[in-house]
Image 1 (tube, rainbow, N blue to C red):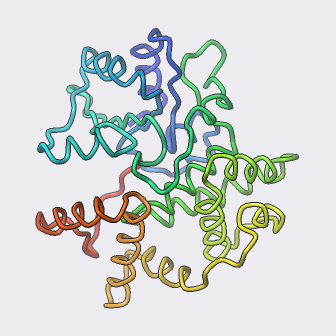
Image 2: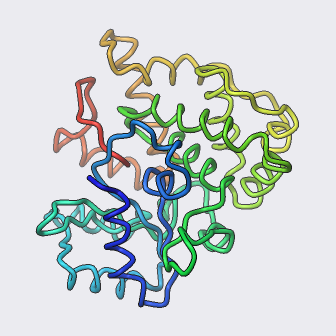
Length: 287
């Protein structure tokens, strides 16, 4: 799909609501710098709006031809009560999928970032526009946090490559790494950002200043995590250790997302419905 065309459509639909609308992940990369999204495949667009504006945003999108996915009662409750986004919306004519976020991690997550801190640093996609993209350090922080809280990793290597590209693109800017470490630590995201940067360094050789890692996590990071994630990232292998690693990453991610009681209930329901992930090929999807 044409991301720029879809963004222009969203500008026309949501631009007059008077609320900040931030593009996230792939769409933000396109509008920030085409080079960051070179060769990327898109299946959806992610946006971030204030939680207080969700009702107005959802009803406005519905009037413009977007409709919510047909989910059962449990899934609707899962999204609307516990998650960081409402159920995905699909345009009735174009088939484009839109994920509307109100923060970047589930409300039940162990970490509780304030999305307003991301909004205040955002910049318009162009002069006079009502849609915004996060600041460079927030683009990288979000990519790292999403990766380290994601239970399934069909696009994990791509996400790590995004981090490496951003490190090369932004890392030479004066003060970038200091701002990244400060913003992550000040928004309850130091640990996942430190883990993600260390993983990118191991997989892609991403150059991360030791001072930045020292601010994010002064103590040595656990060594057992890297071989587990390295196996889980490789979607082409199918041995028992790879399956165990994928399951470990899945459970770890959900443990970060939910308190123990809710997690046990949720995983029981998912297992009963046959939704625990298996190692199989999946279509690429922008998430």
